[in-house]
Image (tube, rainbow, N blue to C red; front, side, top):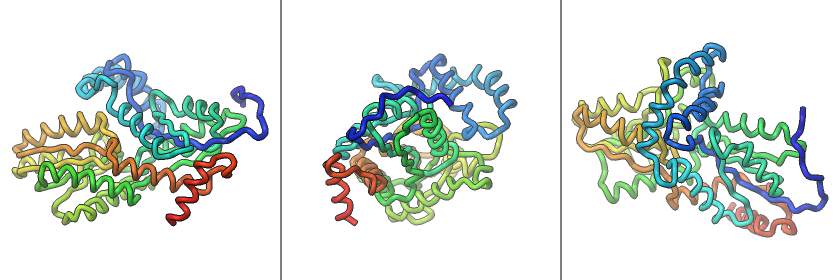
Length: 355
């Protein structure tokens, strides 16, 4: 093992605490050239595609990476903003807003795939003297193919550090009261302006059905999130539907599929349907293009009435409060003595008083 060079250890050096938000990632530009390395990194992850490596390598390089980058680039181009990818923009803003609520704690962000990488950000935080880093994946529901990959990247990045920082990773927050309240508030505020629909569809990102049989809790956590949100909104069971989007390949994925649910509602002449995506805390390709464009078209073409997409949490005040609460709860007992970090000490005392 060859360790990366580090400056000499100095006794008495003031230590710092950091929070690193981690989101999925995004290409650098809406072009086939930028999409190819991004998709290669993403689809080469054995947690994302769980089939034997050799046949998958052949399929990926001989077929998928020769056609899909151009197809994906066209989709990204539809949602790209002057500031860049919506996912990138929202994640950067969330990190800045969280930092404003976490006095004395450094807050930064990284992407699981693409840039800035988890490895580069951990290196930067270490160089700033951060001895303790809380990793906060922006995936509310745990899946091996999302949150699980963050574990891999974090510990891969630290294995070559001679003196790595202490690490904590938040596994999930699918039923956190603040997160549920933020979702319910977001939907309720939308309805106050636009009225209520006949049906609310809560669409989560899909994963292969076999992952549930192999012990992945993702499906159950999505169902619990939806149930708690519906309860907070006062919805009866016949007013909402839970579905799964973004199916890829021929294998069976978690059902029902969002596009099929919306086509069925369209054929039934549903007057108005609203779609929310609780598993995405930031608007991105899957919400803005897949849901608000592709699925919308499927519903309308099937004979449906009005289709409304309810934006993700993004930088809503309720979500930023929840994000700060989630972070603070997971920092408890981890703050440095008052002499080293007065702000952290004061925050710890406030949390203790709250308990």
